[in-house]
Length: 302
Image 1 (cartoon, helix red, strand yellow):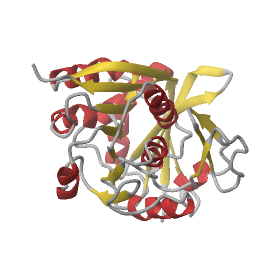
Image 2 (tube, rainbow, N blue to C red; image 1 turned 30 degrees about the horizontal axis):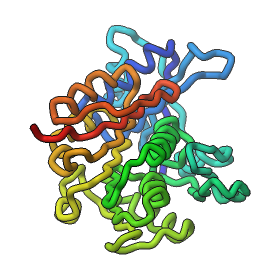
Image 3 (cartoon, rainbow, N blue to C red; image 1 turned 30 degrees about the vertical axis):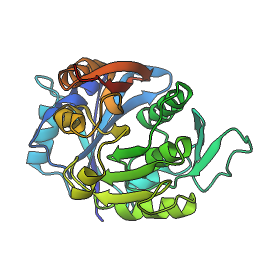
């Protein structure tokens, strides 16, 4: 596939604001994938925004990216990328990480020798959730903390599962749970199925088994039929999380838990407000880098 990249440099707050503007734009072209990060470890305030496209960027593409910067007019460069999967390439050679009770590594590395850790081999893929991102690592740490605090989960759903990693972690912590993982992107289905095999995750509909399906949010008959969920995980983005608040409230019972991630700390207030209106209260939060990871519990009916 022919891929191109648009690049623009700016201060960290400007890039973060551009990413937030893209997330809030309902008309954004999903084929244009954005990422933002610091230029170098010794330049934490100097950031770059990169926009990946499956085509040569035209004037409309440039205008759409430039509009994310408001009144600023950043200089943008375009470059054709080699004929390779840039998502896989960007993840090759990543170091293993430890988060909570978990050790996440690509097949290039061996599993951990620490018997207290559960190792998951998650290869680079087009699906999000290899454990390297602050949101995924933060969710692994939060799930571990919830288990220590006595949370019981008999039914688990991982919405926007990506590679399946967070669903796998939930099944490790609550091995008798019936688990369901879903994602809106069809590419995730074969990715999760391969990762299930390589990590000895049982497929099925019973206790200690996982079902993977493709769905937009909670819009799936099987997801609805398996409710209520004692634990629901959603590591997506702030705007979809806000939109999903009523739907998640409908499938989580009083006392049940949701773990939300994919939101910048600056977006946390809006997300918490949406879930407070939907009947949830904050149980705990983790800030990992610029990202917030929230554990919310459904309030008991009065």
